[in-house]
Each structure stands twice: as C-alpha cells, then as structure tokens.
Image: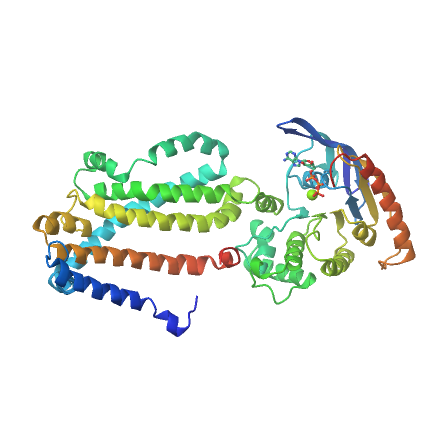
Length: 257
Length: 257
Ligand SMILES: Nc1ncnc2c1ncn2[C@@H]1O[C@H](COP(=O)(O)OP(=O)(O)OP(=O)(O)O)[C@@H](O)[C@H]1O
Ligand SMILES: [Mg+2]
C-alpha cells in the first residue's frame, strides 16, 4: 500500500443525445509518492475526464479512485488542479487569486498573504502581485494558476495541459520551472499532455492512452537521468519509442485528431 | 477616458446651436408660448418656481428610492436562485415572462386599490418598472458563470452552494447586476412621472407637470420641469457610474474596453 494514488478499473460513460458514449473503458493506474507521471493520448480520448474524476469534479461510472488510502468522493483542496483553459478569477488581483484557497479555509489576512507571496515568488512573479489577470500574458496566467494550486499545500498536483496555450519558448521555460518546483516541494504530479517532447522532458513515467473508448495501453518508465537535455540521444530514442506507441493507437482511432 | 482639451468642449457647440435655434423658432416662427415657450421664458420660470423645485425633486427622489430599493431587494435574491439553481429557473421563468410585458402603467389601478393615494402607490409603480431589468440582467450574470471558475472554486475548497455563490458567482455577476440596476434606474425614472400623474401626493416633478402646469397651459413651466427631470436623471446616472463602474469594475477593463 505504498501508492499515492490508485485508479481501479475506471470506466466513464456519458449519456448523450445519440445514446451512450464510453469515454473511458477500464483504466488502471498506480502513482507512487513524489512521482511525476505524464498521461499522453490523442485529443478527445478522455484525459481531462480522467483528471477531473481524480479531482472529484466528476464521478466514474464504475471503478474506484483511492488517494492516500481513502476513496475520492468529492472535490477537496488536498488536490491542486491546474486547468487546461485559463481559470484565474478575473476580479481578483494576482495576490488575491493565490490567496483564494487560504481565504476559504478561514486563514487570517497576514498569514495567507505571506504564504501567497512565497508561492508567487516560487513561480517567478514577484512584482505582479497587484496586477489583474487581464494585465498578464498567457504564460504568466498559468504560473499564477500553479501558484494558486500550490498555496493550499495539496499532496498531489493535477495538471491538465497547463502549457497547451503558450508559445514554445515560454513552454520550455515553464517546464524547467515546474521541474524545479517539483524538486523543491516533493509533490506527486499527474500531468496531462499531448506533446511527446513535454512528456519525455518532464516525466518519471509516461502513461499512454488509447483512442476512445480509452484505456491505458502502456506505462513507460523514462529512465533518463536528470537534469535532462531535450536533444540528448537518450531523449530522442525515448521519443521514438513513445511516438511508435502513439501512432499504433492513432491508426486505430476513428476520431479526427 | 482622457480627451485632448480641444475635443473636451466639442459638446458645447451643438448645444449652443440648438438653444439659439430653439429661441429663434419660438420667438419668430411659432410665436405662441403655449405651443413652444422660448428659452428665455423657460429660464425665467426656473426663477419663478425656485421655491417649488427643491421639494418637488425631493419627493420624486423619495418615490424613486422607495421603488428602486424594494425592486433591488426582491430581484437580487430571486436572481441568485434563478441563476444558480436550474430547477428554480425552470419553475419561475414562465411566471416572470408572463408578468414582465405588462406595462407598469397598467398596474396603476391596482396600486391605488392596494395602497390608496400614498407614496407607497407611487413606489409600487416604480418597483414594477425597475424590478424586471434588474432581475433579468442579474440572473443572466449568474447563469453565465464559466464552469471552469466554478470548478476552480470547488477544487480550492468552496464546499457547497453557499460558498460558491459568495466567492465565485456573486463577484462574477456583479457587473451584470450593475448594468441591470442602471437600466432599471432609467425605467424607474420614467415611472416616476407616470406614478405621480394620479395625484398620489401634492409634490413631485411628475405631479407638478400634470396637475398644476398642464391644465393651465403653462408650457414654459412644463418645459422647465422636463429639463429638471432630465438633469436629475443624468446626475443619478453619473453618480452611479462614477462609484460603481469606475471603482468596482477595474478588472473588467480587459474585457470590455
Ligand atoms: N459532459 C460531457 N458530456 C458528454 N460527453 C463528454 C462530456 N465531457 C467530455 N465528453 C466526451 O468525452 C470524451 C473525452 O473528453 P476529454 O475532454 O476528457 O478529452 P481530452 O482527452 O481531454 O481531449 P483534449 O486533449 O482535446 O483536451 C470526448 O469525446 C468528449 O466529447
Ligand atoms: Mg482535455
């Protein structure tokens, strides 16, 4: 029982106008404490659905999700989540956004401000505390979202393509920063992506999902020592392996990707 | 918005032209003060009516405030319920849509039957006029809260509807509520004149126009009071915009301007 998170035979069926639609079909997965796990798969295969269920925002049709030995039933601040789309509260300045979870928990003004400032510094946004979200770039917004998710000290961080909507250079920088944060905070991270490069650079392990109805087809351990170089021979080799698995899946897919 | 000083005064040009034109037509073309009073006559009537103007404004403002505050106090909780709980919306919306198209003036007989000729009867007509714009704009604001913000709230510890409404829905809907209130105030001011036509009180701008000046064909007095009606409404709107839109909604800048 040394798993941080356990997904046991998760299925998810949506009832739509055209009838039942199985998004996930028997997903099993174990995540170790402090592990950085990337989930990769074609668009529309159910990655977001899976993450939302771990967060407690949605419920599996069957199967159980066990976090720290307890079944996940509803959302709670012990799981931090960074969403695929921008999710800052537009009416709150950066500082107040990061403070949000602490404010809800009833922490006093001074205390929560100190904590929020610490995390804002961690994501490199000192000096932007009093900016509104509309004054920030896309990359900065996602950094604030990460700081906000970390501020409540969750034991696991769920990230749904957090860098999907920023440009390539910013994305590289954010990836490096995330690895630093991960090394410093020792969080377990569940990171959804559809970028092979991202998975190879970040992950301890990569879980490959099949097209719909999705299940996990393969878990690959990325045994490249850190710090990694994006262009090293090992990285290229692993990338090739991962691409092969993905294209195998894609050839089966009937959805357009 | 800051205009260059030259443009800052352009509005004066058409205004002066309009006044000159009005004076010219009244004095040299129409020549009948009971059809079109001249500018000078209107200005002189301000002087003649100086003792009546302030009490009339105050009584009209009293009616206005009675109607507006009660409309706001009833519409806002209902808007929250309708915007947040779909069942409430489905249950109440047909009734709202049935009553909404009834012109506030059609309520006059009932208003007098229920409240007889008191300030409350006038307040009631104004209530009817202001209620629906506030309600519709506010519940639309609540219904539009993006799902991702609600889910962010849940993940950060907003357990239950009360916290979600307080920390996510209300801040998000505030601009819509403000817009509804502004529109509602416009309608309410129109209703002030209508409500006072029926002799609910001895004072009031609308009352004076219809029960004192009009039967005696004192058109210069009528026009003077019309101008006061316009000016007071303009002031109310300016004050509202200054305090509410300028101060409260800085965060909206990125979205609307
Ligand atoms: N609320 C819902 N009702 C019905 N179908 C849904 C719902 N949410 C998601 N789906 C369907 O489930 C499937 C998986 O969606 P999901 O958002 O999890 O995909 P994804 O892997 O995150 O894709 P992407 O990489 O494009 O973000 C999709 O086919 C989608 O149409
Ligand atoms: Mg997704």
